[in-house]
Length: 461
Image (cartoon, rainbow, N blue to C red; front, side, top):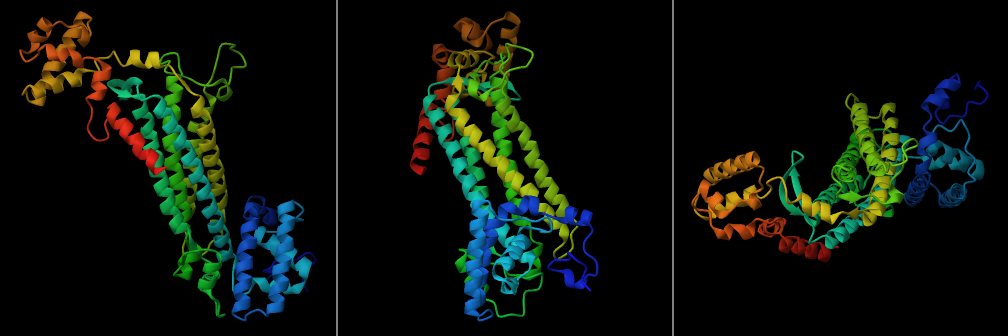
């Protein structure tokens, strides 16, 4: 005799009801509720296919569809009665459907398993979320373009090893992040193609004996492809790993920008001022203005990395096909989606309000012997091999350091002390603006190149 309260879909095999601790430990309802409307969408398509294939009588199918619509309204209105015994959102919806329309509601699960059902829900969910993330990414790119257009004349120091290296345009620097985000978009688009594959019909692991039409379901749900191997289908989480990896790279890019803003907003750099609305103060030190927003972006990047490695670790030892370990895929996925959308949104809101200290940027671009490469290139144009020119200019820099002089301060006689090839035509080159504009190679920092890139981007957006 069945124990009172034993109401699980799989209860027939068992004598005892689940221990309360096991029920609490195995339930995913607390976090997979967000799949509810996708579960309804998939169930509607599945029901229509069962009717089309005459696996389910049309009258029963119509009754199920009306019941699903009623359940959907409850979910949308926030009146759906969840109960502690619901293992997951799928069982919660099925239980409520049966409550509404009676035993016929149990026929909805014909020819499907929760193994392929949950994958359908996740793929539908992720398809929408990738599209939403892409929109936020593009919005951030547009803010970078606007900033770059405002700073096509602003010269700043470019860095390698966090040491001043060569002058660049601030616009060129900002567009580097545009290109990073463009690659992120390509990765997400490629991921979306692999997400957009119908898993429903794989069953628990081996397909079904019933005459289902998977391609019909795919058309109803706008999936351009149907999975090929039922074992692989229910075990596959590659598309989630790929999505988490793409998000990890995207967050890494934004973390690099965040780190630069933290550095640039410091008194030591003074290149940028963060808007008050995107900074915080100290509870003890009245003078402080802390770059908490970019700092949190850095911190949340580690969180996204953690989700990627968590899922990889879950998957690395799993035999085919389905294992309950795979339930652990959803919390990393959901939190990554929320985190990435939050980071992109706050950055897009903050960037237009950044105040760049163009005077400090230009001043910084004038020091640190950043025109040394231009001097070496000058000698190359006069016929000197680059390695020799490099050595000559290195000697000049060493002498300047000893004499406390900058390259721009040397007289022609002083230059000729190091090489007779130096002449008066060197002097017009010894400004950051001239150095920037001479870098006209494709993809370089010259104003002509940057403006050309902005035009090309403008045509593509």
